[in-house]
Image: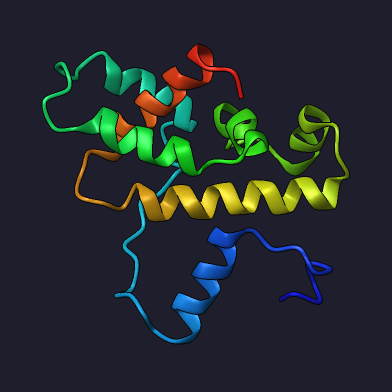
Length: 135
């Protein structure tokens, strides 16, 4: 992995590899980011209209996820269902690098949203942060 990354690996990525290699954690439960009805943002918009105020700690879960996101991942969050070309243009980086950032973001979201909290509510809280806070 270090050769592939040319010597630079984020701590979170290295931790994931070590966890997987040595079976340190139970298998992750995943939440699908895509659905037949439409994109993530459309699903979240539909869900926000039906959700009561946060009594389950959704904002706390969203805060934890937000803190683990890199600045580039925060920029891509509202566009997680777009293609690599769009991500590269948005981040103004090479397409190969954008593909890695986008793949890492999707993997992190699948893992983080598989927790016991409501995934759609957490995603809605994350998308609200995209408009509220600078990356």
